[in-house]
Length: 252
Image (cartoon, rainbow, N blue to C red):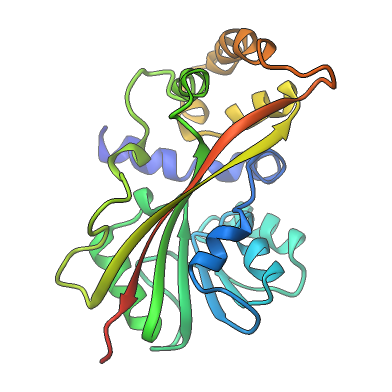
C-alpha cells in the first residue's frame, strides 16, 4: 500500500461521519475496566472519531478529553457528547500538558499513526504509572462465516491496514518509556439487522476509497451470508471481538 493511498484511507471517514456513528460498534465497557478506567479516571481518547469509545469511558465515570483530527468526525463527536472537551489535533502532536492524564486510549486507529511519534506523545502526556491502551473492536474472524464477511471490506483483495497489528508483544518502539505490556481479547455478540450490518460495511476505509460500485457488489455478496444467520425476529447475532494492548508509563 502506498503512503498516499494509506493517507487517503485515513482521511476517508469524515465523509460518512453520521453513518460511521450510527453503524459502528461502541467499545465494550469490559475493555475500559481492563484498562483501569473507573469513576474519576483522567482519560484522553486520541483519534476518538465520533466518540464510540469516548462515550463508553464517560459511562464508566471517567473525566474524558477527546482528540480527533478530522473536523467532520469531531463535529459529530461534539453532537453526540455535548459539553465534552474536544481538540482537533493528531496523535503525534497532542495539545495537552505533560503528565496530565492517567489513561490514554487509541481505538481502531493506531494503524493510522506514526508509532514512534505518537508513542512519544503518549509517554509525554501520561502521568507516571499511567496506562497507554491500543484497542481494536470489530468482527470476530475466528468464526468462519464472519471471516468471510470481513474479507469483503477490502474490495482490492489486500489486507486491511490494521492487519499488521496482532496485539502481541511491543506495539510501540521499545526505546520508549513503557513497561509491562499485556494484551486481552473480549468476545461479544452484537445483535443487528442485516441492513445495519450492510451499513457498517459501508464505513470501512477499503470501501470508501474503492472504485464506484464497490459497495453495491459488497451488498450482493454479503446478503447471502447474512440471510443464513437471520433469526425469526429478523436480526443477526454477529460475533465480535474487542482486542487490546496496554503498557505502563515508566516513572520519570
